[in-house]
Image (cartoon, rainbow, N blue to C red; front, top):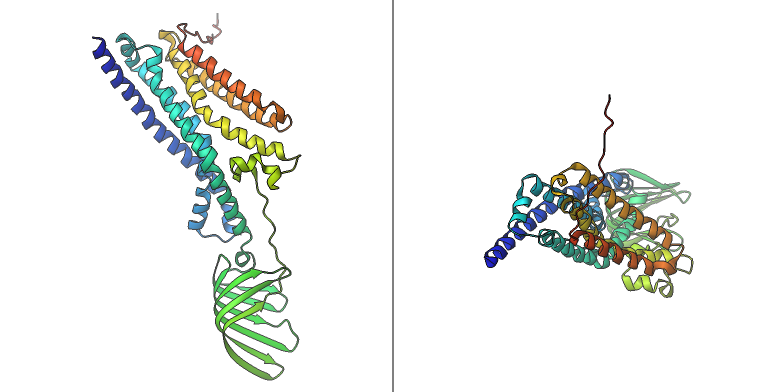
Length: 377
């Protein structure tokens, strides 16, 4: 009989796990889509101002996904665990599971197992993937912002770069121009017209030059005309360089680069705490999956049997989750000032997880505060 019960319990654990995983996939995909779309809306002006194609823009915003996943996944898991266990309670399935001998540890096991797996997954994202993608995103944004061809020259229009210098191009992308027409009247009594199939914009110390390929030059000096062809020709656009050196943020540095940020020249004594806080965030934030899951399980499994499906349980769970999250945000801000207190953050995190496990696995039920309505006489 015991073997049969163990077999039944194993099937039930798989049943709960499948529901949580399926719900997590749906909810996290929806939240991730909403968050990604909001980022796209926020950066639309960036698309227009930097003359990016829609495909390039989508590629750029997709680099934000690791950061969005690290924020959304713990919240999505919390919501799914609350929903799945509340549905089991509403459908009386949880009562049947308890009737065949399942205890709280066995009922909570699928959710905790998934929370641990998601925590490990988030550690891979925050410690490895997110810094790489953050660096790619900021490099992409910097290059797009400082794409000289996009900054100076608009496709399909006559662009007057300086007094007496007009340029027209058919296509302009990544500092490469095609089908180029240049009219140069900057020198008195001389008009130079240049046609070229392709050109590359590059910045020197004091100006911007255009290296042209496969074209011709027609020059008029007073009443004399000269015409010539070229395979390669360098034209001085005479425009001051608008590029600047990119500042490197802590979010795009690897873990060891953050630790040695001062030695590598990324930070000084004043800014170093900000870099260390980034590393502590990467080490703490994945544990939100486990902490939020334990809060949700306590709300639905530790209430008295006749109170489990009440909405106030979920309200208290949400409040608890928000308090934890806001508390950590305040702590991380505080660490920017008191860097030497960071060991206390890890002790606090261990204490929170330990206390939540003790509450969940204790035999005592938790009676949530009743909201009483004032009755009118």
